Length: 369
Image (tube, rainbow, N blue to C red):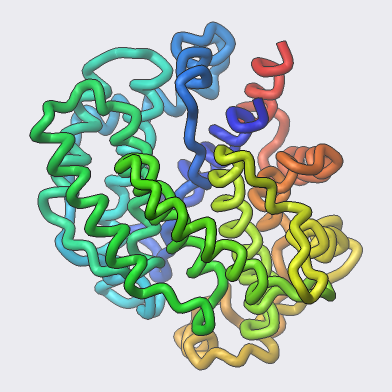
């Protein structure tokens, strides 16, 4: 049941967090963590009275209805990773990536309501991106498209054989290019987790056991190289930023949660060095509770972080106190394995968003009953 609790927890943040991005000098684009539903969960969610009776669903429905009057705006190339947040190419890319928010709202509204028009509009968006975007194997850029995998699974019964085949070829291309670029010894650990997530999602859609086996083998290696016995991550050491430390754990947990469908529990898994996801999450708790302050980026080893600061981006200024509300997503994903973390995550949610109109509280009530 915990899977569904994770379902909409970030939806309101997604809606609020990216509004008006095109008007800002510095842009970011993030999607909610990937949640994959089994057939039983889909059936129980569909036409749920508890969902329909809550005003939060109106927000999702309104977004979907707005998307019904829009047209897809795909691109053949994504210019995001490696670009400063105020670079014109990145700003333009984010404008196009706003389609992913439409796909998110439309596909979930179709699953919840069963109204075919939302599924057909989802197909329009998905088909447009499959026809235009050319996979490159860039894990950061293509992670922005992960909702396309979910959307395909949500509307597959509405697709013709030819449409399904075309999308599967595109997804297979993404998976194979991601595999070719796997190198766990370079770069940020959160990127490796994103890469494995895309490959695993591809394996679900393609029913490809070879892809699954690749992810199983590499995920253990990822934990060995990413997590330190003292509770830190490689990303914290490299970036000297709790932002990247939590991002690393969030992305690893997101992939671990998907792999739990294979009855694999990685939360307590201990590496040869004595590191574990549980210990790394525990390391963050004093900072998430506000008991400790982490000053970001002071000793980052990455030149690009310094370029971001010099560009005037306030988020990357050395010495900036870490925003503890960034831990919410990580805590909720980790609470799948440790219920005690729900209290802190709910406390942070209330302080940041208030008690109303937030999906974690709605779904807790739905699922507990």
